[in-house]
Length: 219
Image 1 (cartoon, rainbow, N blue to C red):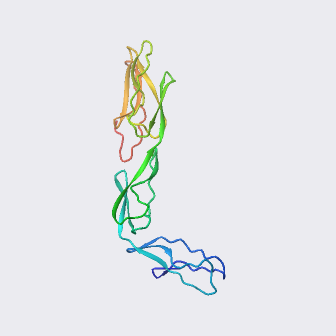
Image 2: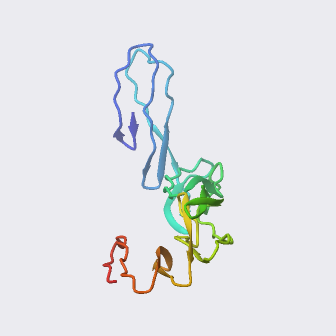
Image 3: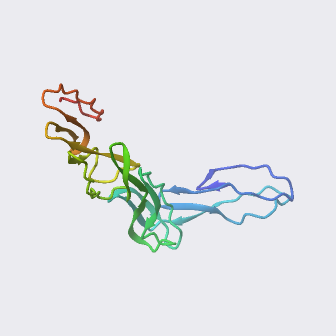
């Protein structure tokens, strides 16, 4: 089996046995080789040489993911386009390439990766008991629900409630204060990280900050 003057495989096949050609998908300069010419069904009673069939690539397909170029693939008019592997996104399922034709029409085209968000559960809790559960797609904006009334206490916030739904189920506890307590909130990059309800004069024990690549925690 010869491709562009280079031997790709040399098989010993008995006379009359089926001929199974090796898979081929190669780009050499401007030519794309994808099949073998005149492969017999069974082996004849003599040695044979089989050559790869090439097609001149006459255009490009740009594969985009979240607006960024993932790969630019050269293609042959009238033939299927070789697609790269789409990157995994936490909390999402890859559905396909938007705008990808069955066969390449020629010229230069762009296609976009399409992802579907997974659905996750947000559970609101009051005094350790489930109060309400709401489902959100990953990345969707979260609208906080109204908290229930607790006798002799004032509602302050839902502990750890982010602005958008993360790629996992979430549980948020309702924080309430009395006249003699106050809420201390810790935030990282604008998002809530931890809260504590404290009385005046209580010694503050700050939580351990998470690691952040490329940064050193300073306080």
